Length: 389
Image (spheres, rainbow, N blue to C red):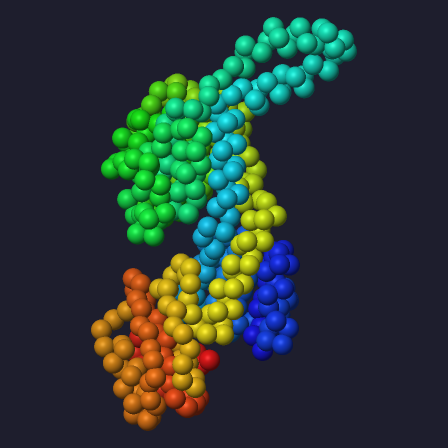
């Protein structure tokens, strides 16, 4: 029986994918084999020794101690792209809100509580509507920073609305490049993109290289009056730099999903309460993807969408399957196979993949793997974890 501990409210459509004869799923459970969560914050002490996998129903994994998990051989999954459409639609709303005086106009209308005469109200609206005039999106240039699952969808959406789209992503994957519309103009550096864009939208993970990517230096490259949208992560933007840029007329709007005390009440700032992925459909999609990935790992050892171990998918063959996580150092595979050979274990099929400091092996063998062999494999210097499926 595979025990899965849940945090937060996980969509029932995801949880229903766990068959009752193979899985025990609960928020209070002893010695879980896996953890399924959304935004709950884990620390190293809360991850029990029995845990071999953690699945985050969402894209970011800042709430999980990934480095600690890697050291222990705990595979951490996320669900990239599952909430992409929800975020894409909110970005569209942000662009529209930044183009037209919608928020300001609605606030003005709602202030007219003392005006009871309909004709008088109509005359007032006609007289004052020029205060809330805006601009159309057609023909404007959108700069997309980060061209992954969400960024590419935003780019495609903007093109369909008649916008010009330029993109910057120094770490774009081959898969993402294929997904990107041909009409997106690739820009070689961030400063050039900022200088050419009427709107800039950010779609990057938080890394050391992206933390405060928009800062007092980079923000000075903005096209005068440009508008900055951040529906990625708060840490990518230095809020003090945003206030400075707004006060100095460098940018005209900051539209973001991450409220910060320093931004409250600042003219030109439009903040939302972190609702980018807050749709019923996105929560269902994330839960379904997270559960399917977790099940495939627990039942077959396959890894899809891990943030700390390489992708590894191998069709089952043989009688038993070994999964081995190890440090990515020379002679590891030879040592593992030698141990199996010394015990007359015949390998039917195998897959070895590496990612950074870590490697992962799927090894299908004839017969059964004894506890003694597992103990010997675990004792090999550099081996982090061993499972038999």
